[in-house]
Length: 238
Image 1: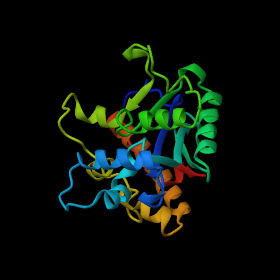
Image 2: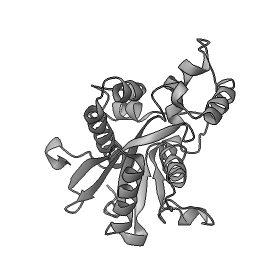
Image 3: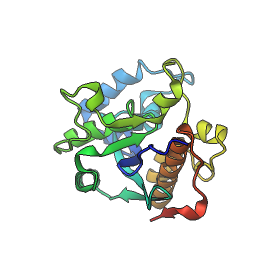
């Protein structure tokens, strides 16, 4: 066990995203044309039309999707306990502003570190792009412009696991299975978020799923650093 491992300054995060609109036809006309161009370049084994592909795939692109909830969590009581919660608001701008306030008010201040799985490729840039689209100035911890690599306070557990092997993607769910960490995919899978949000009006279920992913992420981080995971009684769900 590495007793020098610092956890108190790390904010573990996970975001859930959906397509910008419920129906493709609800998109502004200019964005519809851009999506058609993008869809023509996407892998499409089922040969789906752009309108159908939009609902299935648009959520992962910040230009055509939006953030609906952000899971956050951190260790406390000398790293013996972990608390996770989900920020969820009906309005994306309000959600992003509340997340910005949370990171700026964090007790770690300028030493705050953000941790996510595949965060460098997805969570961090997605949050930045949606903040800018919503007219929100980026908080320092997300603004990497002009920073040297060692000045960027981001941890990506996917990069940790790759050990320099950049040709393979390993999901959080797979790693939780490998390390025997209780998973978050029992009641929902990421591919079901759009349907749950737009057609089943199940925002609460999505929020709980997002929160559980944050817990899995933190437990994985412990394992990747040679520590044992926390027992369920030491995990607080707010």
